[in-house]
Length: 317
Image 1 (cartoon, rainbow, N blue to C red):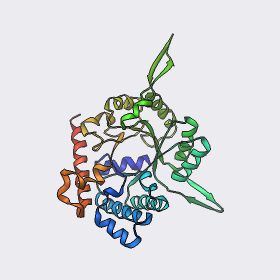
Image 2: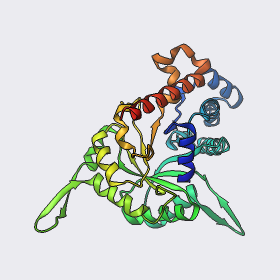
Image 3: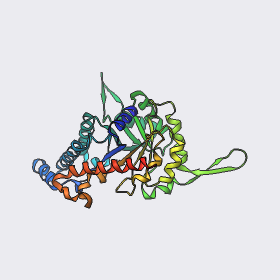
């Protein structure tokens, strides 16, 4: 699947992933009215409004981007009905030829990680049948429990030729509380040396992905926030064969000029996520002219502006 992601990036010329992270406050009133008239002000009504919102956005941007990243929590808040819409969204995006990165941040003890991996990326035996669960192409993985919590995902990736993005240095302001902690290690010769935890995790990403390769990049990638460009420089050098999923563009402050160091010399190696900046573009002053009725056209305009911003930054690199 890493090869398909790269092919899609080359085809679109846009190393962009649209974060499909819907909240009801982002959904225009006319869609909520339509959904509530059919299903009432219920969990099913809310989920239907989200589905209508997602579908119209995808219909307007699928030809511009290589991938989408639905954040499962935004669907889980609406219970089972929300998860049904999560699945519908995954399926619909794949029908449109998009690579789907499930932002699920799973990671647990070995047996539980194995179940998560099977449920999101693999297949499960049901009697005499073999069935698929959510069937995303990639998912995000939390490595906090160590290798025995990550290796089950790597195993399924190898079997299914799918991928994971391991949380290494996240974009949120408090990420440094743990991720920047200095780790004491034995140095060459005498004494000890220290380095931040995110570098230790980056080194493990390289290890986990070493025998899990596509044509030029590993199935095991990393999440590194756009809001930390200096750390991104270091991690890019440490993980030359790992694709980096970069959240934090736009609404969290990242701009194209902050992102160039996440890319390799081949112009690949990174895919930049924008969520609110795309799906809620119509609510921004820059795109207010589209109005709520044409919210998906505003999303398309935001994608084009983002693509041009990143391309300009890379050309100036």
